[in-house]
Image (cartoon, rainbow, N blue to C red; front, side):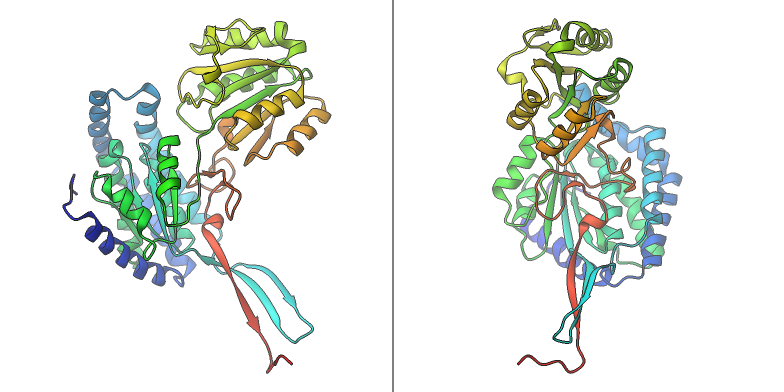
Length: 419
């Protein structure tokens, strides 16, 4: 482990070369060996929990000295419960059906051909992420489950935590007799490694950025490798006139305050004009009582007056923008203008506005009467996810093991020729 390496390109060439070789082995690795590797990694992580927490304390100390925000510190922080959660995710991914080799479709042609579309690994996945050390385990496990090698470049804030978790992942590979190069962690804080990954078309098949607008924008601008975009979560909740008051108040408080630093946290509240002075005012008061700064538009009494910059902002903090809208169509128009196509929610009992909201919006995740904090691969039954893809090609929404597969066509004939 080192903080700087003189020749980043040479280092990344070496990492990419062995990753490509590992991917070739993993593409045909038996499902039981991949499962054994993940189970062994989970066991090792549980056994080394104290070492992981000690490494995390070193990262937290650095974060405090750098003046990281409370939300960023929350993303970075591990405790016994969170480590246990990572262990649980590894075991859940291990227990999932193997996605490689699934027959996605099969048909016969009049020309005598039988055609199967079969799931196959992508190859080598590069994951570039910021302060969350749990991504080291989630991304490594999901890529392995899907038969991919992975190159991980974690944030400098989580440098020590990520290496401690990575050691458990490598121990799992070793125990199962799989190549240790299947899960590699870039051993430097030098940002040149990010640029090298984005140029590594010979070694990496797809890049997954996981972080804020700055990171994702950099990747999308500079990458020569294909990208699964995980853009910021500018998450909206629209409270319809038909919303159940108790449900609405409970859901909104959870969506904003459970964990403010995750991409599923609510960032903008849209309230139907007919309930603005009643339920809307009570919701705003609930948020303020919990310590949330409500940046309110006309028709609402918040902590401060909203400005144009507040619409379309991912606060990742105890802050939320709030606005009165005329109806569901007005809410939809606002979300289309300011949203990030990540996750948006409607609270309503009348099925008509719900149907319109679901039909007219094209966010990766749309929710009804549920906290947006559920926008997470683990909560979707995927064990974990490598990110929430907001683009429209290949993978969309939570990216789990199935989404880390491509496919190929297997065509069989019996001496068929084309006339």
